[in-house]
Amino acid sequence: MGGWIGLEIAANGWASSLTALCPAGLEFDPWVSRSDILVLRRRMSQVLGPLMPPATELVGKTPVLRSLLIGDATANFSTLDTQVLADAATAMRQARGFYASHDGMLHALFDRALEVPHDVPVSIVWGTQDELLPPERQRRVAGPPHAQWIVLDQCAHVPMWDQPRRTVEIISNAAEAGINSAA
Image (cartoon, rainbow, N blue to C red):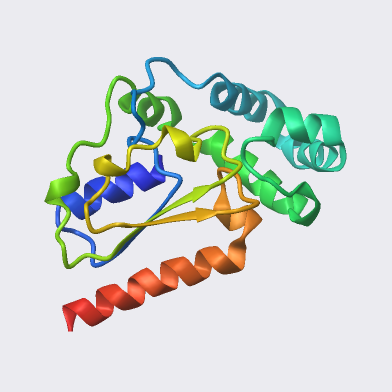
């Protein structure tokens, strides 16, 4: 949901650059109900509570559990640090606005593309293996017309997990372009 929030911030004129990673809100059809997999992850993180870090390590080491519980988030489990998974689970457990933010995107799509200033560099990034928001479900016309669309191979819904260096490069390039356009 952070990519969609970033798009809204840019449309409000509050950004000098934007990199939206697998953003919701650009699909052909809006979500009409909560994501079962996200709700399952949230509930598991709450039920397991303090046991979440060791449980996450077990998930990280067990192929069947990895596929079931985080299969849409990452394309390459072998390079993913289990501490990153534990931190993500803890953040999900502690997120007070989880359901409110999730429900806020139901029955809606991002519809302010033309309000994003043309001098704000925008990169929209997708992973070829993103099962939560697959690239083929995205409407490029829903994004700002000047946006650069980047599709990363061997990448799922969380590009910073699968391709951290490339993700930093994309963000840095957009930020640098935003600094240059403001100068």
